Image 1 (cartoon, one colour):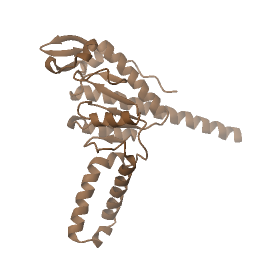
Image 2 (spheres, one colour; image 1 turned 90 degrees about the horizontal axis):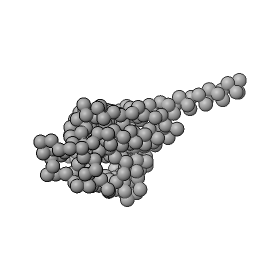
Image 3 (tube, helix red, strand yellow; image 1 turned 90 degrees about the vertical axis):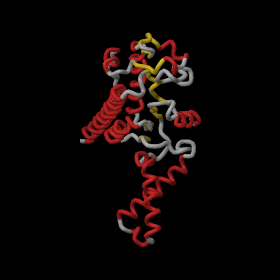
Image 4 (cartoon, one colour; image 1 turned 135 degrees about the vertical axis):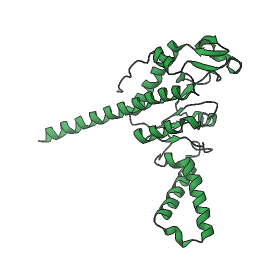
Length: 248
């Protein structure tokens, strides 16, 4: 059972610029029901709905974390690179923050082979085994390692397809959503006003461009993972302690 998340208030989302949509010329009419009003030719989200839907997404994240499921975080937006790196370092969840490699999910066995090659090249450079090759070959291997590391570094420990993915920007990383849907992998994501809301479920209506909005949302997602992983570890420790006492 997951730990329930603290309610998100519309005011919190307002202060963190989650309410600002795209310009009216770029919106998708399917998002009409989540619209509050228009100001200076920019749509404004109904934060009452956004807050409620955000809590639902956080509870799903909590359920996944408490079951030790893997969530792959995807965002190739420059402003989220540091945010995703923090999530990877604190939660040990895999991330894609540079470039989505085609067929990463739908042909995962091939991706695992690429990861194995990356590890091999890394080991060869670290142990100086690479010195047995010519300078030209070493130079090529260095370029290959750089390319592989750029896209595979944070999924190196992902031994199977993830149990869910969290996508920050549907428009920018649509291929990730497409592949996840082919494999029936649950998708959680942030939806701005330029997307068809009928295509998917489990999303947060919010600004997916402003760094303050993204920081606010991803911080709460990260906190939900950490809280529920810690809760699961404590329960596991308690069970172990009970068996030890029983044996004594």
